[in-house]
Length: 396
Image 1 (cartoon, rainbow, N blue to C red):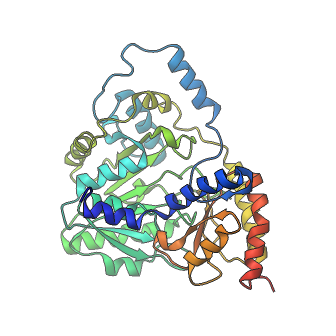
Image 2 (image 1 turned 45 degrees about the vertical axis):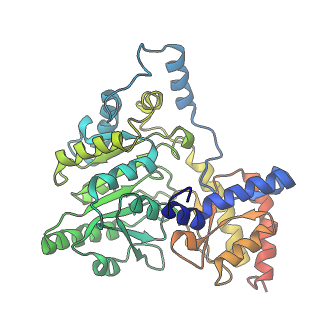
């Protein structure tokens, strides 16, 4: 057999997001890009802010000798200091440069964090719906993924979580603003999570780390604020990237930040650093570490995403589609007009509309729309969405 049976199974299962993205490329080649409406991938359409481009030009035009060499596996001290300063201001806690490990994006960061805390057979709880790769990331490190459903508004269901936590629970992944729903978990829910974990850790004699996956934290609307996880939960680890807030997903730059009061802090930081190296990342990209150091308060124009959300949300709800209105990220997660969300996605594909079935996110009966696209694509797709609404009886 040329590849392992485990990898072969993964290939067969695949990622719906990538499948639809690849199908989009095929259709665009066949029909022309203007005739295909690809809402499958969270790949920012807009360009990075001018501040990022200026910083890049400065570094390239006036290079520091040795700027492309290896550095400590956790990253440049000056970049980690810049991040720690912002985290300290936002949380009121004593963050220092050695609370931070620079990573190859949030995906790399999540794998490093899971590698550092999991023994084979340890359990990681994720809330459905969730980012499709969580299952694979957990499996990468011999962990077991335990899925806990959210409520009808896609907020945390603490009673369900209470039933799911066991002596084998090692970590809980929280993603807010959420991919795929765009929901921001409420302060009340996160405070309840903090209280529940305190009780469970005392009852079971264990430590449960909350890994907060935050690449969309700056992309929020309608005056919404994302609760600071460090203020609420002692054993918290934030994993994030600049893929979305600076529109540079291809540059793969992010970081892990660990609460200064987390259990086994120094062992955890040492573990994260060695895992960053031994997993083959070695270190985060040197040029990008320098480029983002002074951009921790910079973000793309959030109003652009809000306008696209409103355009889609108002038109689709008028057609009869039902969904929770998102207050962050750049996704909509409507209910499918039919129970079989995969069948609906295939029907949409016949209208040259590419969306992703909710089954891929652990929540069948829905589909995800990524609206980090051009406004023109959204406007031109509405005719096809309306035809689908008529075909499935949403419009009488």
